[in-house]
Image 1 (cartoon, rainbow, N blue to C red):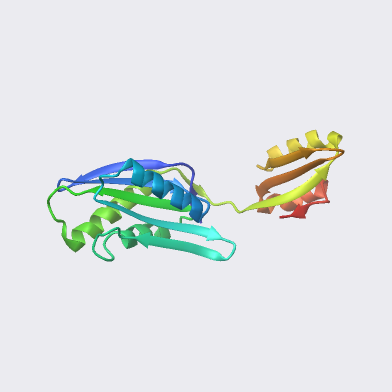
Image 2: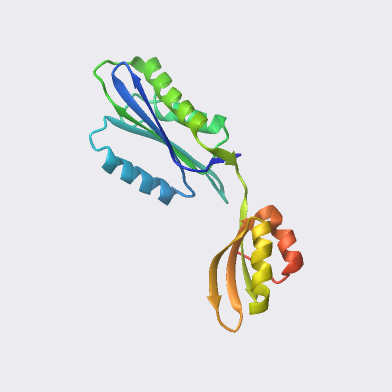
Amino acid sequence: MYCVKSQHTIEDNIKKSRFIGMIFPCKDEQAVVRHLKKLHAEYPDATHIVYAYRLKTPQGFVYRFHDAGEPSGTAGKPIFQHLEGKDLIDVLLVVVRYFGGIKLGAGGLTRAYGNAAKRVIDEADIEPFIAMASVRLAVTYSQLQPLEYLLKKLDGRIVEQQFAEQINLVLELPADQLPTLQQSFPLLEKI
């Protein structure tokens, strides 16, 4: 599985129609909705705003695609097929279309949307997906610096910290690094 590191945009013109392909990293459906609302505000005069997304959740994969008024199966599905074919997760791919006056036909639309999706995926910064784990940990003040050093080596980070008699932390790190962390700090509570 792979994911997208950052947003990327491409643009194509096919028979006077303008296609703007955009790919976004998204962790959940709320992020997808925020991006779509923003795009509808940015491109209020677009003829179609077609999208597909694929998310990994603890319950399995969640995916949707939408033709946005194009003939059924000619827009959202070709975009989704590229996401699935490249095994991309936690991603939203949107193609904004401005109609140029020349009809493309069902085959032409399928190719245009599919090519826009393929091109934006090919140009995006893609990396292997790394499953992350979140844990709670309480440490003394003298343990904080060694913990920070270890987290840096394990590609982990402190998400939340509360200072009291002890320091209560929420940590995030690659799931396969959890045993290494537990060797040094055995009182972990998995979230």
